[in-house]
Length: 281
Image (cartoon, rainbow, N blue to C red):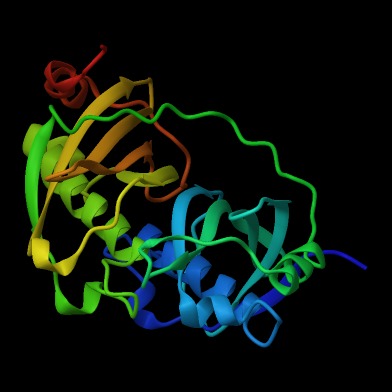
């Protein structure tokens, strides 16, 4: 029998952000944790020891949730198995409500040879047992803005580096968030995460193109506005290394009423301040 594996992830108070719900970067960390728990104690467990790299991850934030003592239930399934990579699908639930869905492309990696390696037969068998139907996704534009946009230098912390010796994919999501908030709040005071409206991340797609090593000391993160809608916007983010763009991402923000959680139009003053930063090419 095939099908996804369900795991439960305890939440921590530190998962909450200033807007009173579990932060989007922490959700990416919870997805990572669910992946490890689903693979642990299977014939694919060796991948956790020898190394996995995340090639791409898309996350859709369906509903905000808080820390209340209940765990996050995540169903982890596999929708595609290749020679050297797999596509995993995640569905996260709280109190019977689906709050997050995600998909990620991962591959086993030989860090001694510095290259991806092929899946073993036993690893393929594990992921075959986790087979699920592929979830359809609405496409989101991902642009390389490494030569434009606003630049924020984000220092690399010791704790950002994982056991494989590179900056972890969740830490990279944190760099994108840091640069995004600093850039947008410098464009307009209406982008501050307080007041009569909030800005909520509803979608983030990230493409990991190169490893980021701690020897780099800091990351040059570029942020650009590439779409401005009635109540939402799309921001592109790129992280630059000497070899070119290491990460490209798209983040969709929605302006919401903090009391009702419903989307509201971007006010005229904020829109007027944002327009000069819109990149249309």
